[in-house]
Length: 144
Image (cartoon, rainbow, N blue to C red; front, side):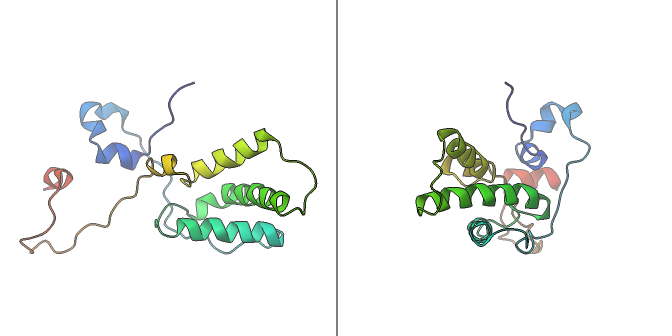
């Protein structure tokens, strides 16, 4: 099995395209719209899981967007199932496979310590160009 693809923004920040400019991707979907409200079709427990996941990701802006709604809904349903079982509301036992699936889904959203290290969040550009103390990074040299 091959490696997971890295986001284009990450590859640009690490200067990966300097070495291999032909590997630059033409376009990658970008969405700045927020996730939006909880879908009405979710049960109370599922809606609670949705809100929990959205609130958990709120500290890192740009991680969850409108494009992630369908996947977030699946995660909410799966997480609510685990919560219902733990609360004793669901007598049907949860398989190890189901628990691993929930863990994997949460990891894909960057909600595990190791997966959080793989998140790429671009900081806003500094607007004060006339300030002599503006932050300098190895990336700003290439743009000047």
